[in-house]
Amino acid sequence: DVTIPSGRPNYPEFDETANCNTILVKDGGQVSIISGGILNVVNDFTLGEGTTGILNLTNSSLDVSGTFYADANSDINYNDGNSISFGSINLDNTSDFRYTGTNQLILNLTYGNLYIENNNTKSITGTSASPTTCNNLTIDSGTLLEIPENKALTVTGILFNNAGTTGLLVRSSAIGTGSLIHTTSFVGGTVER
Image (cartoon, rainbow, N blue to C red; front, side):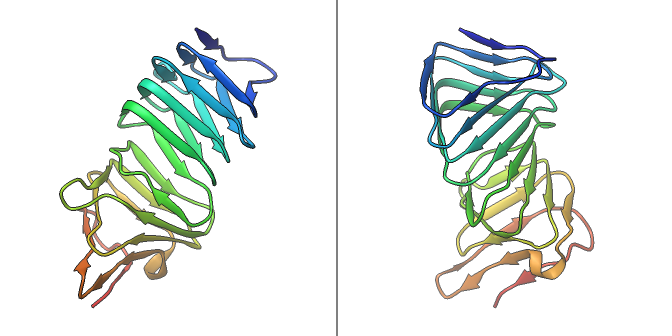
């Protein structure tokens, strides 16, 4: 069992293969899996205990056989080249999941707050039968969130599109139409067809 406390000058960075039974990142603690690192967790991975916890993933692999818990106000930074799998996942409604890489596919999950960052294109993978869902959605300036044909996104809170009409694209063609469900007024975007 691994516990990562808060208030340390340095936090663990996994750049090789590591295995553990459980991992708990305490509020204020952080863990990074980088540069080909592989972290295998046999049981549960808990990120934060109610106020904050940080997980950074860059060119790495995280395999949690049990449940991955992202507690309230925790922060997940998901960069390029990652492989991630869970037995199950529970992202608190106030947790932040940030896609910070280039040309990424958005995992089909139920997110707390979803952030689309760092320019380039990010594409939704949820379907109308199983949509990608989030509480709040923020699209950074210069970034494009694409909802391809036959893919679906539901935003239950507020949609912030800081990129304007070029930052949100709902695709439509003869093969199908993307779906975006939200209740925020005056959101810029482009809908094909």
